Each structure stands twice: as structure tokens, then as C-alpha cells.
Image (cartoon, rainbow, N blue to C red; front, side, top):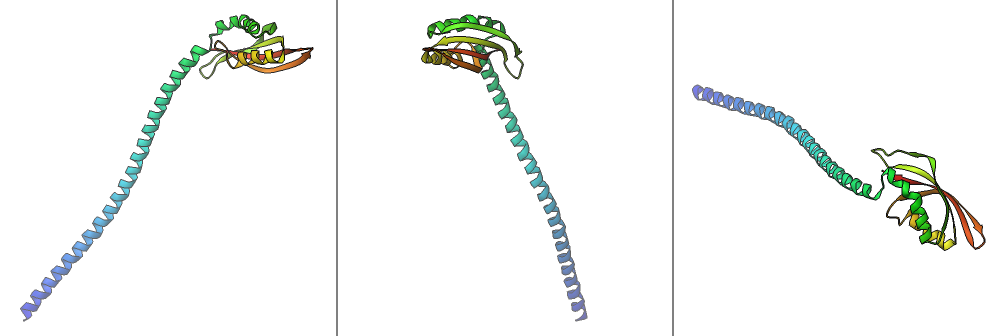
Length: 176
């Protein structure tokens, strides 16, 4: 029986040693799996951020193409600097269309040259006379409905003169 007992103890010891080895390997693998899982999660987050960055760059590229398209369109509506020389004649013609007496249209010193960030402009002064309705339709055409020039009034003085009004104004006419 001693032989049987030795054999049983040896087998039990080997089973315990095998079990301990399996537990040790399992613990070692589990810690490695945790590290790898953490690394995988970190890499997936990095890949997600890179994909978002690539998408943003693609969106910016599309927007950039759209901006270029609209800037090209805008340039067809905004005259070149040398084309604003006809602005005075155009304002006088506009005044005639609306029954407004254009007394003076002068370019003033000041303004800005065009740049990649924006349009250039020249400052102008304007003196006109007409009824309230005539001046209203004239100003509407000058600033809002004009197909030829991009003009903006920056200030004006309106004085009643009997049945009509005299308006002194200043503004900017923009060019590319």
C-alpha cells in the first residue's frame, strides 16, 4: 500500500503542479491580454481621431473649392479698380432714372487696395437733391439693387429744401 500511496501522492502532486502551472500561465496571459486590450483601445481611439482629422481635411478641401468658386463669381460682380472711374457717370445716370438731381460725385483721398483677404475700396462724396420718394428709390438702387457696382454709404446729412431734400453723403465703392 505504500507504493500505492506514493503513487497517489505523486500523481496528486503532479496534478497540483499542473494546476498551479495552468493558473500561473492563465494569470500571466490575462495580464498580457489586459495590456494588449488597453493598447488596442488606445490605438483604436488614435485611428478614430485620425479618421476624423482626414474627414475634416476633406471637408476643408471641399469648402476651399467652394470658396474659390464663389470668389470667382464675386469677382464677376465687383469691378476692377480701373472700372470704378465710370462710377461718377453711372451715379449721374442713376440720378436721371430716378428724377434726382446729382450735384456732385467726387472721389476722396482714402480707401484701401485689394488684398487676398478682402476687396479694395475708394471713398466718394455725393451731393443729390430730390423728393423723399425719389431719394429713397435712388439710394435703394445705389446700394442694394445695383448690378454694376458695390457701393456702401457710410454717412449722410439730409436737409429739407422746400418740397425736396438735399442730401450730402459719403461712402465707399469697392473693387477687386
